[in-house]
Length: 199
Image: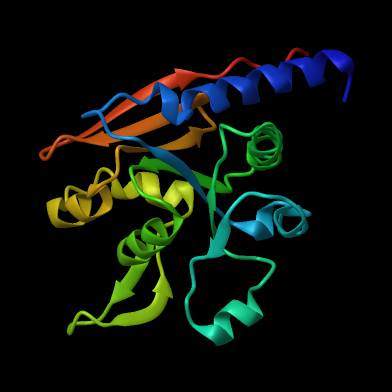
């Protein structure tokens, strides 16, 4: 990649980074954390970067056999760090590695990592008719997730957005970052334009 393309990619990732910075989210005076659900199979060296870094992370699967089998592939919940210098550097690197691979779903909520992991599992685990977890995780991939926004199932949408300020995922066709909010009746989508890489 040329120096110009490197500069263009950096601009794009920094815009993404600034958009999901919890300091820029003002909502009911709450203190937010920003997280990513990442599919490690789409991002080479992703797991080794997590292991060697300081970002908090955990696998979405809670069953021990699945955790062992999918240890390096995930999906993973990662808390992005916008405060420490090392955390900022690792967060920028993570976003850069994941962007363009349809590998991450971003969201913000006013919870620390342990509570967020429980909340995310509530959202993404399929349940049987008795409300028991089936050990299957659903629709965390961005393309599948975006389709759910327009199915009109209000029960599902309420569950997706409880305690959550909003979700972000990349829109390849628009070359923008899509931001989804739910007002209790309708999903609202806004776009943040990401600077294109310089040819």
